[in-house]
Amino acid sequence: MTDAASGAPLVAVLDYGSGNVHSAVKALIAAGADARLTRDRGMIAEAAGLLVPGVGSYAAVMAALRARHGDELIERRLAGGMPVMGICVGMQIMFDRGVERGMDTAGLGEWPGVVAELPAPVLPHMGWNTVRAGEGSTLFAGLEDERFYFVHSYGAQEWSLDVMKPFRQPVLTWSDHGAPFLAAVENGPLTATQFHPEKSGSAGIRLLGNWIRSLPAA
Image (cartoon, rainbow, N blue to C red; front, side):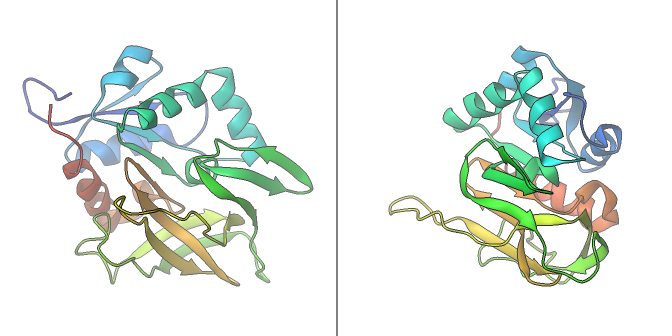
């Protein structure tokens, strides 16, 4: 779905009470999307892309998401092969579980694995960091040497999803803080970043532009 006047692809930003949503909308617009903060189920279903922000604890984000039936909206889009992008805790909840301060919370289960505290002497991991972009990345095309802005204490530190041919292997991008952790995943219609593109300056805008240009045409 695109805006008839501008031709920009419509990206719905899921409004479920979590995340720095207004800065995400502004960043998407700057990157070339017709971005709209919405809870409208029809718009979310029909948009070219869905952005899932997330700030706060894993448990709080999952509770807010389920209260708005956001988990169902995400799952329906992915089942239909429609693009979804998660940011920060919006990436973390795509995994099976999150463990924070002894609380074990079920996630969306799109990817196997547990999100756990980073084994670093200083937490949170806050500020600019480099990434090791996976081979063939669409998201990081032309951005392999850029830095991105992180704010988190937890992350996915392993990857165990085994994708069989003829399906394409996920593209994994890693960073380090105490230990390696996943900075981004590109897996079919589901893309996610642990860092905040909307806080990452021009590099973040360009990265969002790469994702927007990958969205299906109307």
